[in-house]
Structures are given as C-alpha cells and as structure tokens.
Amino acid sequence: MVAATPIVLLHDSLGCVDLWRGFPQNLSVITGRRVVAYDRLGFGRSDARVARPSLDFIAEEASKHFPAVREALAIDRFIIIGHSVGGGMACHIAAREPDACEAMVTMSAQAFVE
Image 1: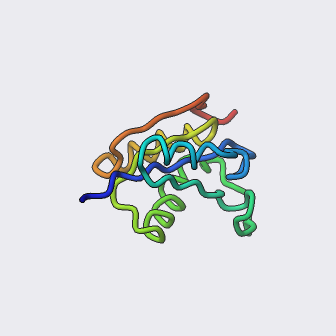
Image 2: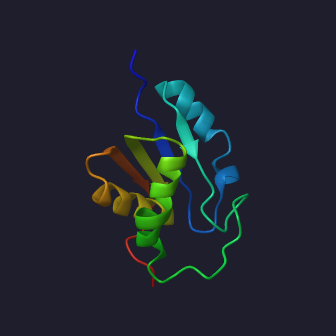
C-alpha cells in the first residue's frame, strides 16, 4: 500500500507548534495522513536565530528552510497548510515546488509584510 501524501503545517508569525494544540493529531486521524508541524527557526523549541530575519523572510522560508525540513524528514510530495504568515509561506512554497506540492491551504494568510 502506498502511503498517503503527508500534510505539513506552517504556524503563524510569532507562533509555534504548541499553538496548534490537538489539531495536527486530529487532522492525522481524520485524513489518515502523516501530519508534520515544525517550529520555524527562532520560534518555539527550535534553535535560536543567529541573525534577525530578513525583510524577505517569507520567501526565504520557501527557498532555504522548508527544503531542509523536507530533506531531513524525507518528504517527497506534500500538502501544505499555513496560518497567517505561514499562509504566505505556503503560497511561496507551492509556487516554488509545484511538482511536489499536491495542494495548498491558507488560513488568514497575508501576502506581504508592511
């Protein structure tokens, strides 16, 4: 049996995995899919950032950090769900990885940072 495509969750701007509460587990049970929620660099239980985020930190997540997460977790294809700033990151990731991203969902996403 082929495993279902995993779902990756991206948290909001100043959030962390803990703010998802039981959502990842419930989503996994309901969909039968692996659900991955990770703390972006400098948030939650992740490593501290060495420098401040760049002004292009939303696009940077798609080009630099998310590929490292995919590689570390051996994620080939994925469904991406992002909340707030995570939604903007999800848009960048889906645009950058169209052959790997099967679907994208945004919740209260913002398109740019003022």
